[in-house]
Length: 317
Image (tube, rainbow, N blue to C red; front, side, top):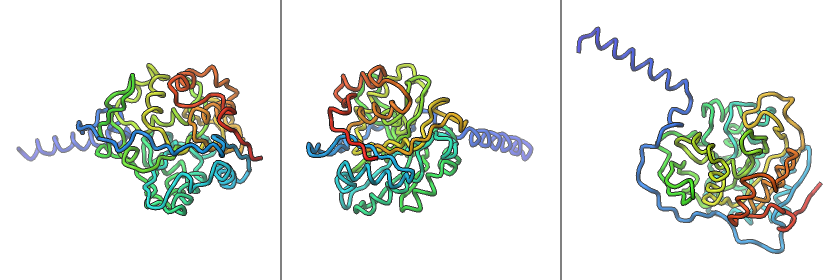
């Protein structure tokens, strides 16, 4: 190759690299390179039910860390969900390049405290990760979650393409799909969504938050959004759902942006029933859970109860 041709070709390559980097998730709309299905140890991370304890708890407190601890203690405490030596993956909503005040991502104070509690319970490792819609580095930093989780002792992972494995999700709509491996190679999964309005699904809380375990062409799933949400919830049943309703995005979801769209509720919910968690969370949006498509379908599928009082509901105020 002549020197002039080499310079031209190198310049083209550098330009392509710059454009790719600027788009954030360069693999977001690409299939993962891996084609080998992953054999899972289990499709469920749930713990055995305890009839002596409520299935859903709610605590209100201007001190958000204290609200989390009060709700968690009322449902059995962290040692009910995490045992010594276990590997724990915490799944906040870290989807958007927003500040905590804008309520598009999970409250970083809650994420940091959950990491601390898991390690205090003896967890061998706590991983905090997500597959964002915006640029991963900016989103993890600006949300405050990277700093809060790392300060508490977590390993915070910004996914790269090599982190995805092909998994058979076994759903009616979702079959083989690229999944971030940290959500299947773990002992316990703690789902930590924030309550937000969503233009397609009415709300995005716990079950919709599970979109963040997927790579590939996730935008395709919006065409049958209720079915895809339920397929994910059936596949990836979390050990515990911790719902952030400290700040609630009541309009402009799921991305948010305007502080005028955020209502302050200073509330945290803990649940062993992901349908009940979403049903109670939807009420912060003044939505009727019995009319929300994916909640109706999830209950029919046997994933939980919309009537959260039927599983034992306790408020600590």
